[in-house]
Length: 168
Image (cartoon, rainbow, N blue to C red; front, side, top):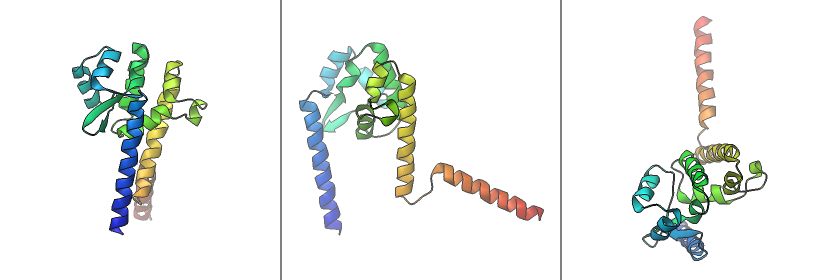
């Protein structure tokens, strides 16, 4: 069983690396040097943005690559992308990439990047909240735990039951 699981994990990791390489080859992910040139920033800016979680990076064979979409638009659009990336917090790079680049039903079938570029920052931010909420619920469910909301409701119910028992 453990061998099958390890084999599956290796296969998935290999597929992820290959997918990321295709993103580099297509120019969707760029090196630090290229990112700095395109965005008009320096490496210190990137370091600060990574720490603040407003920018994310992928590591491929020990080298870091950054989403080119940060560099393709005017400064205000980039700042709005950074705000949403920061709101997505410590989600990993793959999850943030998925959020920004996949069309969302809640956005009328466009990507959050397209929404931000189209002046719909508020709608993209709401989509980010929903994305985070679904990730938290999924993780809690995978662990066999109740969601935070369900746990809070359960605690309230228990407090109510104790109070009712004390009155009776």
